[in-house]
Image (cartoon, rainbow, N blue to C red; front, top):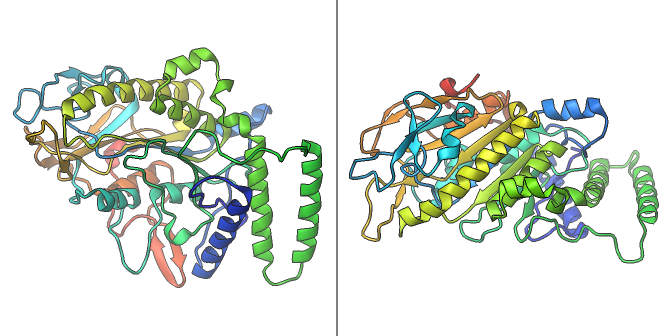
Length: 436
């Protein structure tokens, strides 16, 4: 357990960072949970290291908080009473149409796999988000980690100086902080909620980098000597690893600075919040962070659904298309699984406020990249989008599919005390049509 990644509820202050790590270490040791190694380190100029970073698997979770409408995105029903005002347009996949609001993704559908047949049953925000984020219903006796937390653990590489998981959510609406469950505080992500730069990672005034490095060498030497042949050696190792993480964040300060990007690239992504998050996500993935989450809020369209989606979907369409192109051009797409999910979809019925309400009986999600068969469309809903008529899948199947795409056995077990817990819920079925 040499790779703490603490829960950071407010900011990354060095002392709270260490307290969170140590608490997480105790939770993990006492719970008897088996874990893997740490995450990939800072970017190197060595060509062999560059190749290794391109080949190492990682994941990007794009979370459309509030429940994006499948009708205005992946599963339009033009001409039906449930369909709304937007046309559908052809894509690169023969016979498959998407909303006219997504022309750029329509032209990149050969990179994507779309599943139009989710039935997850639960349509209350918190419970639905818990379900789709973990792949399991709530259980009183055990708190499950979210899929992103599991992925950060499984994909991590030992002795990294970067976080194993970075989660961005700049809007307050629908904000959700990833839960580590029984894996404990070691595996909590670095949260970027107020800005895209971690706070409190600058050197104290008057202290040079060389002096800080000398202090760090002395601290690690003394703590290692102290820990030798003493009970609690793992906790001291946790402290040392935590300090290395903080040092890594301090050295990686420029990684979080979008001003380091060429102006042309910043303009390609756009200066929207979602565009800047996705650009930072690409930088983090390329540097070796194995798990990144980008969240875009305000999809909960009980009022003025069509105007809301007229604003939201084109931004999503443009930025996501640029991101997929960028990952591909940099040789990263084949090793990066891109997951596009909400907590549920929207109702076929249009309510009195010209909105769509929560709907979990027939909705859509999409994948791209690592382990995914691009140009695939799975499942079908009826002509009004009210029910799944072919290829039904549930939240457990989504989790199993994500794990399988990344080469992780969904039936692999963690242990909480003596209890074996498989990564995906018993009976979960990876969706074979979307997998290579």
